[in-house]
Length: 290
Image (cartoon, rainbow, N blue to C red; front, top):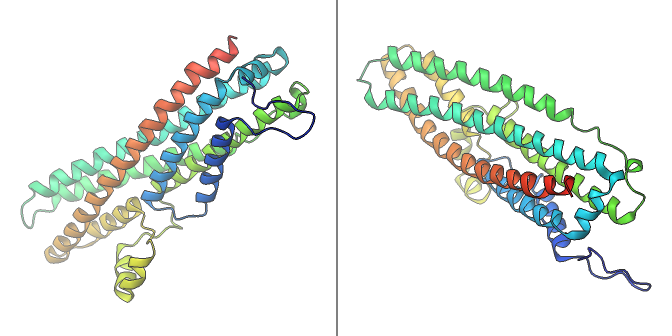
C-alpha cells in the first residue's frame, strides 16, 4: 500500500491516514493559542492521544516501514525510538507529579474533615508538608523542562536516503514530536504554576464580581494548582481563629477543585501513556527489526 500513487500528470490524493495525521496536527497547533485552563489541557491530551493513534497506524503502512527500515535510514529510525522513550519519560514525570500532589491534597482534605473547631496545629503542619512537596515537584518539573529544551537537535535530512517519500515521512514524524513537546510543556507548566500565572483566588473573585456577564461569556483561566498554593499560603499566614477558619474553608473548596482537576489530567495522561507504549512496542521496534 503506497502513501501516494505515482502519476505522470496530477498527484493523487494522499492516503487517508496521512490526511488524518495532518488534520490532527493542525488542530493541536491551533489550540496552542487557546487558554491554558485545566479543561483546555485535558482536550490537548485527548487530541494528542488521537494523534499518536493515527501515527501508530501510519507507521504500520508498508511503504512507511519499507522507507524507515532501509539501512541508510537506520540512524533516524533509532532517533525515533530514542524520542519515543524520551516522551514516555516526560509523561512519567508528569504522572508522578500529579500523583504526589494528589496524595498531599487527599491528606489535607482528610485532616480538614476531622479537625475540630479552633484546632490548627495538625492542619498547619500538613499544609507545610504540602507546600514543601510542591517545591520538590516544581524542581523536578524545572529539570524536566530544561531537558525538553535540549531535545531540539536532530539529524539533518542529508542523513536520509535521497528520496522525497522518505523525507516527507520523516518531516511528518518530526512535526508530531514538536507538537508533543509543546503539549507536554503546557502540562508541566500548568502543574508547576509559575509566578506569571494568576496565583490569587481573591483576584479571581474580584474579577467575577466586577462583571459576571464577562465571566459567563469568556473562559476564565484558572490554575487550580496556583489557587491552592495561594489559599494554603494565606491559611498559615492567618493567626486569629476566625480568619483561620475562613481561610480553611476557602482552602477546602480549592482543594476539591484541584482534586477533580488532577483526576482529569491523570486519566488523560494514562490513556496517552498506553498509546505511546503501543506505538513504540508494536510499530517502531517492528520497523527496526524489519
